[in-house]
Amino acid sequence: MRKIIYTTLVAFGLIACDNIAEEDRLIYEPLPEVNRSVLIEDFTGQRCVNCPTAADEIQKLQKEYGKDAIIAVGIHGGPMAVYPNPERGIIGLATETGDNYNDYWKVEQWPMGMINRGAVCAYTEWKAHVREELQKKAPVNILIDNDFPGEDGLTRVSATIQGVRGSTTGKLQIWIVEDNITAIQLMPDGKANQEYVHQHVFRATVNGEWGEDIKVEEGKKVTTFNNITIPSDWKRNNLSFVAFVYNEQGVQQVVRYPFNIYAKENN
Image 1 (tube, rainbow, N blue to C red):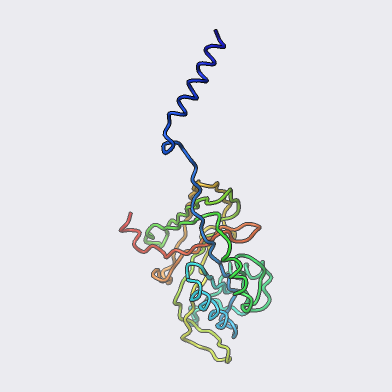
Image 2: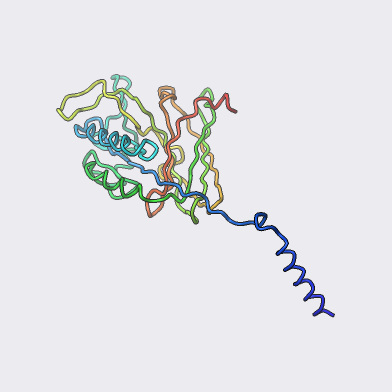
């Protein structure tokens, strides 16, 4: 009797599966491939006469490949950098974190840079490394947003990481950068340009100097929240977040999102 019941159930199961229309069956569809963007960490300084030439190289790369594909961050640190001195009216762009990055990566001459966390190299080598990195696909997508800052400038930053291919383990790093800062810069001819306009200047890290641990599976999402206080002298219209996921294999994906100055209206 048990054999008869078992056979009947198996037969019923086979018939039930066969009766499900093919278009109604659950079939896993891989997410579309995502092109990998390139992070250029530009180690620079206001006393560095050759640094404007490196900045020009970044502009050329962005013009050729697009600003979404080439994302640069100017990290002012080391002996060529200038710290702010409000009492003397000096607009300096150096930060303690920038100094720490210079020390960690053992930068000893300027300008130098890293392409997707590869080896530190001269700007004359950047284009070749950029071309190589642009051929790769990204295993994750990244989305950044922020709340409207309170009276003290405090804002919450959210980051959503979506797995696109396989399982990705590493660090999520979020920086805030500012464009269009007019400040002194030594030029290739040795003269000081008081009206030089600095772009993509590293201002601060949102989630620690080395980011936070992250792991995301294909087709899944992970969201993190962090707080940062926006100083009153940072122009919010010129601020952006640069977020990237990196591990021992380098930067897996990088994105840049403008600071959401309309967050109050949207919430």
